[in-house]
Image 1 (cartoon, rainbow, N blue to C red):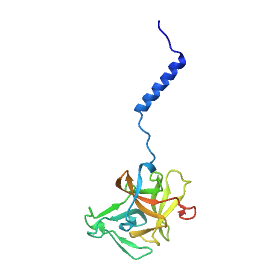
Image 2 (image 1 turned 90 degrees about the vertical axis):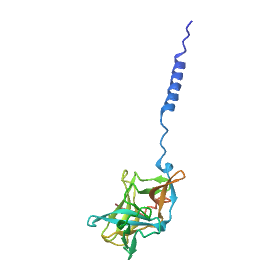
Image 3 (image 1 turned 45 degrees about the horizontal axis):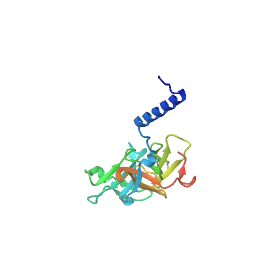
Length: 199
């Protein structure tokens, strides 16, 4: 004699089997970027932030130079407010001596545990009386634009960007492995009037 299971039991068993199969074949959820990577300290004196001119110098972009060894200098600095940077690394093979970070592949914004590279871009903006490094929101324009560094005066040369209080450089880390990517880093969001500006 053939016995049939009640419809409710069949439905429950089918749902359980479907859930088990889905769990077995579905990929693990991706962790948020802020938890996937951590930030490791660096020796700040080995780095310099530079507003590097584009074209005739009417606009500029962020470059970061790192002095990896003392074999020969990667840059020199003269004057102040603004300080002019001579990128010496452009005149020799700097492999193993210097590092140069010139775009978003080499650096990004991080505040605390939040990796904000996809939500903010780092932009050098000339105001007429100064040159500023700003973190500008790319997705939600209601978010604040953050003032990170400034040169202290106008110019069209390679100019040193001096960080505002609370900002520093850190290096991206995955587990115990330190990566080449740099963070422009702050422990917490600045107060509303402390270090934010209008784009």
